[in-house]
Length: 193
Image (tube, rainbow, N blue to C red; front, side, top):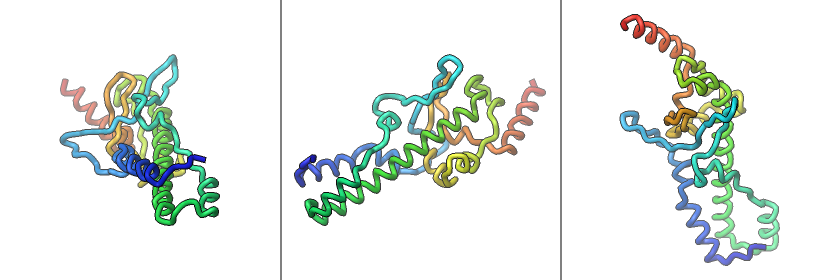
């Protein structure tokens, strides 16, 4: 159907390998907290009385959607022996990477949607007092993922809030104990003033 030459397949493979998606999904180093540098993944925007998760721009991976892989076509090509074994191995590796990208993109979008709903009052006001306790384990259970997956997906990523400031995704998660501690510190600070 596509009749790609081996040279074109190799160019495509090199393009995918060098594309920024590899950096976004496979480089999971957590940035140094003294010099935060986050990858902005979306903006949460308020329209009327609703919040929407929107892509930052046309090049962000949230707007690109999912990669559709035609495994049936590949199977037919393999059965007809139209793909050399060494190329098939590379294609299989590429397809596994694309599957991982699809899963992470879907998980990220589900996390953003969950945050949008759970932290609705905070997104309305911008006041940290309106944040509700939320753990990675809670969101993992809700969307059917492992907590370690949540941690990897949000590492080094941020969103733009409805009031225009950048907020790291990890900052939307707070345990009840942390919330109580923050409230006590606010009370003390207000008493001192």
